[in-house]
Amino acid sequence: MKTETIYKDLGLIDYKEAWALQEEYFNILVENKKKTEVGDLPNYLIFCEHPNVYTLGKSGKDNNLLISESFLKSISATYYKTNRGGDITYHGPGQLVGYPIFDIEKLKLSIKEYVYLLEQCIINLLAKYNLKADRLQGATGVWLDSETNNPRKICAIGVKAGRYITMHGFALNINTNLSYFNHINPCGFTDKGVSSMQKELGKEINLNKVKTELLKEFEEIFNLKFIF
Image (cartoon, rainbow, N blue to C red; front, side, top):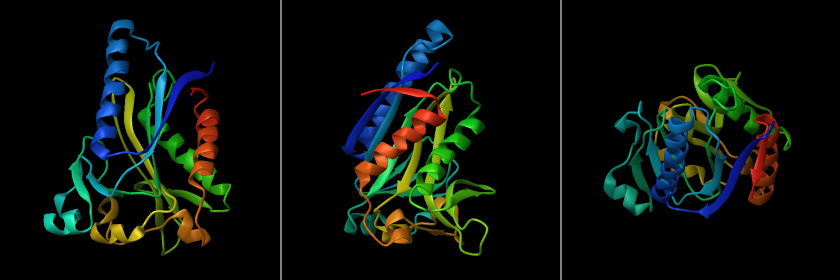
């Protein structure tokens, strides 16, 4: 049976505002689960873009942000410490950010299996654009040329889970301004690059088309029925 999932496209939204909305949905599902043991409410999937922002995960180190507070302001960027897993990453216009607030117990998945399937959604999507993406051992997310001397991360993944409810998610570089990554050690790495669909394909990509295609991947891989 397909799991009902409410889909919301928030467009360009401040990071903190989207985080607050995630927390709201997360708490709704957690509280419902406490009462019913098996959650009987729909999941949520949020797609959005953020104004320039750097976010640090729980296991991240402050020194992976390589710039001062005054420089942050000069490049119109903000900085937040978050409660997700992973290290530091960048979000900005032209990047598709996805926040699945899923009851993975209802989906019969462990957190490890959930992250694996999240990566698979992105890998399948990129294959539609003739971009061969894969996983990189010891590093979460989706990578290009993962088995070469030039691995490039195209999608970052960092999640939080409580009572088998997930939040936070993925950030796929589509038409992203990659110069912002020069100011951090992306995901804590100093020896690996980042890329975008636009950079790899040499043209601007239709963001709405990517959203539609990625929704289909989520629908199939997680066996979801979307409520629009």
